[in-house]
Image (cartoon, rainbow over all chains, first blue to last red; front, side, top):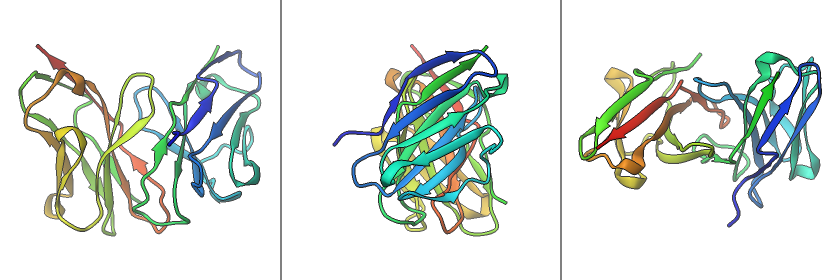
Length: 116
Length: 113
């Protein structure tokens, strides 16, 4: 079974530029998550999708971050314009089922963003 | 609000020694608890999870963790460290009806010869 795919793996941009990340979850997984992991910290949930609907985006900086999940499968996360403090690893995860606390989340390898 | 605290950002053990990584949680409702491992330049991999069944949970790679409600702890242990265990370990909790996880800040495990 293929895992969660993310691209690109690395991205370097200058502040005020735009950037987009792509995630392809495990086939059949209904729930998709985007996390931000700043160096030295644990992952922080940015947004959670259930199929193509948003379940939780309370910690997404909506003035600059946006995300969508196309047809309930792939997802893109965009930052426009980027700030220095956005430098982090952006992790995508997916889980099976429609809800439930015990659902294991499967993580992709992440995209390391450096904002100069 | 729930929170997860991992004591010790860096832990160093000798190969063959006991591994003990500490995790404490704060929650007003019974939590589900998880330990994840992250190898360099990789995503997180689930080691084990506690979901209110047995308090002693066994996971992959010889790791286990014990849920202690009285101490609000879920420490991760392994009897004998191996060089391949060197990685970053994250404790996470879920106390809501959805599957949202709150992560601790992580503990980097170093294994020396």
